[in-house]
Length: 328
Ligand code: GLU
View 1 (cartoon, rainbow, N blue to C red):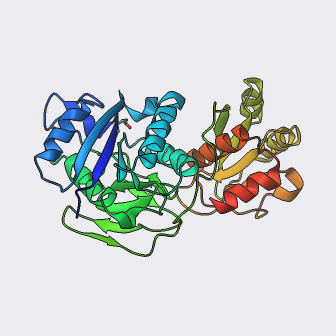
View 2: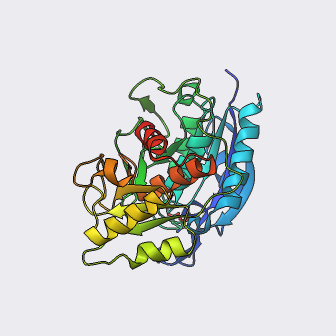
View 3: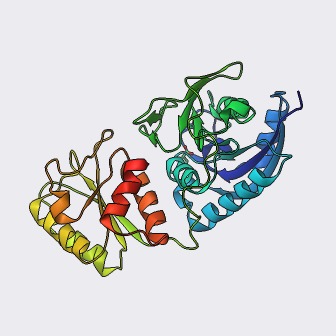
């Protein structure tokens, strides 16, 4: 069997983070060069050839359109290159779900594309980065990883990027998956998939946008009024994602202001500020009458990514937007 050749795209984050003290809390994400991570991984003899390419060296709270466009271009080139068998993206965990989902929506599923991060900096006692990275090399080297969409490897689990979310601020078991559980369990020694690839042969669902429209997340809180909605429309929001209470609820005055926005052609997606669960149509809010879209399984951060992509593609009619959320 030939050795798989993997492209490793570095963006920074804690996996490339270093602190001044192995037992301290403070550190700088993205401080270490990707080449150092690759050299350390090469010493472990992980059974793959690793080719590094720096995209950025930042904390992922600062990631945005320029880095996403560069990542998409590098992934597209790697997918077309017969010498490359898979792509690994090292990434901060704060926004890994957003980057992963955007790439999932805009790349074909022909080869594995796998994000990986860490919760503890590389020089911390009990660092998790190299284990996560070794696990990711195992996943990206496996031909059976193709056809599953973009994935995220953290905490010995392989999650679909469309399902993954960060649910803990500092635990090394920080990610959860909804509506599906993990696609596989992985250690440096073993990889066990729980089912067949379900997206084999799928092309990109959407073209990568040439620009991203302003889409805002509005978090509902008890006793709030409608002025935040008016403020968002005032700064030119092209779409609004409500991070509502429960199944995407908000006070009556807020719902009324959002209905006015929807009537004016600004898509309004109702998601939930609750950590997990579906937001379905017409439960307590009459989406049919008010022109809203229900986010279904997507939380606010991922709902915003999908809505930005849809608006960039000219898809703004509530029925068409709802169909895209139903499919996500
Ligand atoms: N905030 C930084 C980031 O997301 C560090 C957190 C992390 O990587 O876990 O890049």
